[in-house]
Length: 225
Ligand code: MD3
Ligand code: FE
Image 1 (cartoon, rainbow, N blue to C red):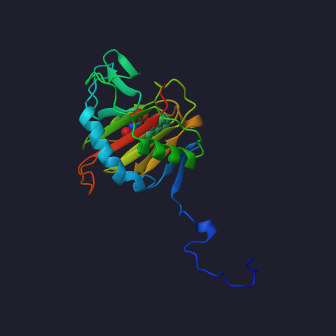
Image 2: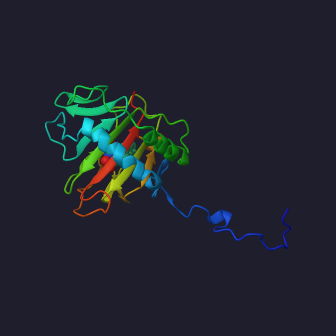
Image 3: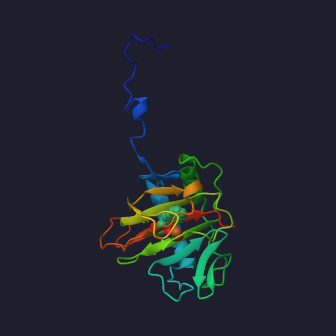
């Protein structure tokens, strides 16, 4: 046992209270930005992402209202998200390939579970990972995510590539939004009372990211079924 008066036997890099420098930002009652949380996984993720995209390439889907989304979409996992003129839904089969969506790689799930746990959501079991691709100018208008069977599990979102301005609104479309910049490697976890808040993404600005080039890719992990 080290006595109070004695100097420490080793010099630690951080005192306990300084460990993990302020990397978690709370943006809602149950919403947290984990800055850089995905960075240790990125190099494992990218080749797996390329394989997924060979089987299920990004496509621009049409909304029930007849608008073509500016964001390119794909999915992996048991369920994937689709929209067309007849509505929004989760399916087991990719309507473009006619095949099941590519499997969700183990490391995707582990990263999402680690992030959920960090935000206080234990036992997160995602069965869907939506993959969004933003090229410069692409945006996502304010919306709620309501196509999942239960709103109890959180949603985990991973940002890669170019930065984006995320809009985090309230429970009505016209409630004021807060703006949150999201950077390469950031993970956001949204759950509980914040799960049905309106949200969107402003048009992506032109730029070059050293690893992903002129695009932003976002994964959202959900328990959909
Ligand atoms: C807040 N994607 O795919 S992720 C979406 O950056 C979507 O691509 C955006 O909105 C993107 O549906 C934002 C963050 C996100 C996802 C779901 C939420 C934030 C959320 C559900 C409730 C509240
Ligand atoms: Fe959404």
